[in-house]
Length: 118
Length: 105
Image (cartoon, rainbow over all chains, first blue to last red; front, side, top):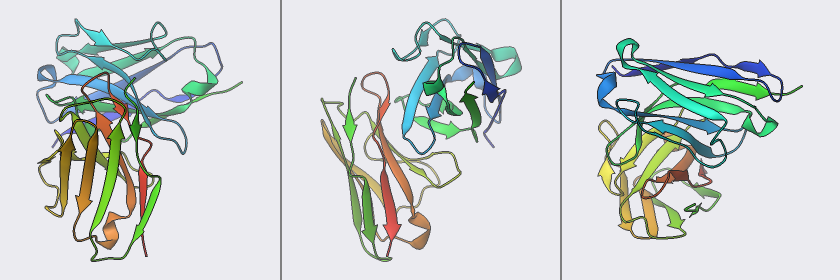
């Protein structure tokens, strides 16, 4: 059974940093692109980052480019999101997701809440 | 960015057929996918590649379309289908529609 379990969320002040982790199991982690998708309270979904199987290629939308860094450790079947210079608009539930070959997200974690507030 | 537009809400009776639409601001070929999200839960993939049913998803769900206009159909609708449905395109950097909240009468 595919499982994705996020951790590392919490309350952080604007301008500070936070690192999210996602532990994957039930599939060969190194064979899949992985991604982070977020959802602000009562809002829609926003793609945040994608990383290739080896980690050599990363992709971001303009809203987080230069502030967020996605990385992975295939030996540990783990995905990470380093978030710097956090803003109030980054407040959201962050989901770790496995990305399929056609660009869809076929498995999602339960999500972790990040609140950016003073 | 490719903008995806969905109608905000629909209300139908159990047993009826419902179609949920998604319009893209530019062609995305068949790079369109559909998700179901219930309150307090993570999204669940229903349809990928515009018309391919994800494994384990009931055959009551189907998808169609290409280019800029796409449809998710549920036939027949059941009470458990109460949820918000999102479309997502992958032809360009991924973007999602605003979601359609499906309520049952």
